[in-house]
Length: 223
Ligand SMILES: [Zn+2]
Image (cartoon, rainbow, N blue to C red; front, side, top):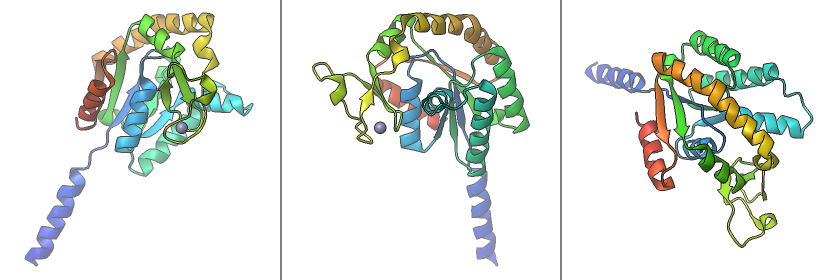
């Protein structure tokens, strides 16, 4: 009888110690969202749910990219992730004030706010732009890699899946980049300021050596 009691107690302690933690990443393009998400997904099994990746893959397949549809898909993806008791990283999904209201309502409905950390990766516009011009993307596993000097772009291979790495056309479209950064400063930054008043917001400078960032990301997982 005593052994059964101890066994049950252990089970209770085990389950009350399981904590869910999710990250909602809101940062400029080129600030390191992809690097953060890939690292956390590979090392800690977070499910990476990104608006950018979803939009691009639907565009490639000539499917609708209306925000209404994209949000619906992301929402379903999050619901499935939670059902499996997995942790998620929602990347780049807050794009406007009205879109933030959509997510705020959803997070409240699902009672997720206790488990959500909003992550802002800070870097100057100049740093972000030079990173974007220097990066290659794996369309298969969304790995973000730096171009290696001297090797032609066509010969760059993803070290994780062996797929060919490619440049993202939009990273080299100066007019489009300018619009994205202006939008970030005018629309997204005020949203972050609001979030800081009510929710858990973590700001990290992503202008540090990658190894130092990984150490910080490890700490974030163990918060
Ligand atoms: Zn890959």
